[in-house]
Amino acid sequence: MIVVTGATGNVGRPLTQALAAAGEQVTAVSRHAVAMPDGVRHVAADLAEPTSLTPAFDKAKALFLLLSGDLHAPEARPTDIIGLAAASGVRRVVLLSSQGVATRPLGPSRVVMRAVEDALRESGLDWAVLRPGGFASNALAWAESVRTQGTVAAPFGDVGVPVIDPADIAEVAAACLLDDRHTGGVYELTGPEVITPRQQAEVIAAALGSPVRFHEVTRDEARTTMTRFVPLELADDTLDIISAPNPAELRISPDVERVLGRAPRPFTGWVARNIAAFC
Image 1: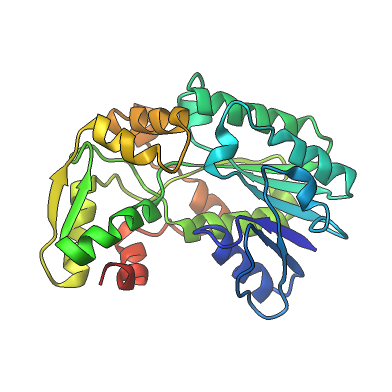
Image 2: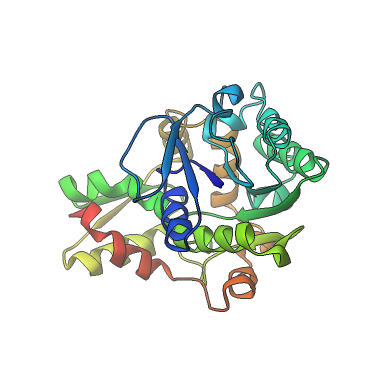
């Protein structure tokens, strides 16, 4: 049995589907009950309350651990999840971490995530760590404004990073969960090219076949929006990266190709698969 946390999200959903398609027994964890692929068991649990995961870990051999934004806060205790998994008989954990752990190690949210990585390494379990940069799916935050106003609003319009398609993260995660060769691996996951928010808006416009206007907002405006959904520390750490990425954050990592044997998907591919969200 493989447990997938965040099973309804942009990474967890395709990971759950991929594992089920591979014939694995899967327990999908999310806060609320939702439809799942045939044969997938669902457990409603809140990662902020680690003991709520106890039913999910019954007979589990592996865990994909994705921490929601609130679990990056300093007062959260996500390391308790690793302890509970080990005590429940889980033997392998694949952790979705962050590129910033290596590139911005002193950022408050990165310190928290580093502690989770360290706890995993010291747990005695088999493990792998995935460190993605920016997600292509962050563009879904623009979906409503594109539909209703034909507008994308974002900060730092001409500053780009190599965003990663969440489907690629899911495929790498599946490989790490199923293949012993990836035990102890730390994989930095990026897309195949640096792309700016303005260029992303142009890709969406081309896929729609209609104009999309780009409106650049200030850092403070972006910070106000982000803190509705994530802790202040995580918002500030993220804005630090997307405003002035350092050379390590601009690097195109070879790790997706190393694991999957193919290049990562471009942003155009993500838009093509998700264009209905913008219509």
